[in-house]
Image 1 (cartoon, rainbow, N blue to C red):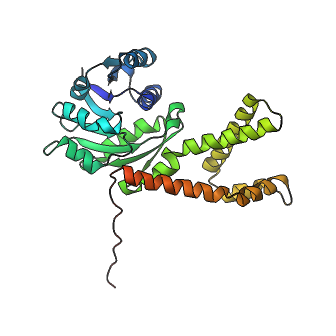
Image 2 (cartoon, rainbow, N blue to C red):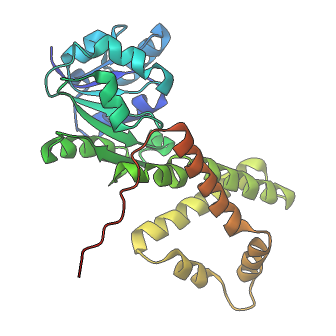
Length: 282
């Protein structure tokens, strides 16, 4: 039976997308098929999501309108070689690998293949429906196609359509940034424990404070600098803490980390180059 969504690989991200799409009513569980090399993984996702499973990647490729390649970058070529002759005409293939560009992926599928490629970069908070996903459509992808993909990823958070050359910046401030946030929460919790709170209390309080601050930025539309100023009373405790953070290089450390991350992405990946600036004659 034809399926709307097919997943090759059933790791955390695939599971998050499957759960999100089903819970949001984007697709029904019976409209999804998933494959994996691990029988235990298949049994787990079959039980938790009630979707059809198979050990065969070819079964997924033959029967799905949209195929998610939720696999490690180093096995993309192997899997693509296995499925490329079985994919339905004009099917969409979603790339979830950080370092694989559209051009390279198209070359893997070979000349004459009429599939529609879409590159994406979701982040791990998709597991709790608070993800952020960058999306870049390849050649032949229509607005209707793209809307279908956006609807799926919007079921696990928010999306941003970006040109491929900006995926390094996106990865540095979204794909990798949950790790920075976890470190911030951990450090805040350590400080809370130092001053007498239990570990559980300190973690919960720190995480909720960070969640609330992020929500204020998104829902008020205010500049973060303005919101920061509202917390900093003249001569108060918060401005003293902010000054100490500046003294310790807090802001510069974050900017440096993002820059290093973006550079590493460029080294590991094969994203499209930034377009050259053009000037009109006056």
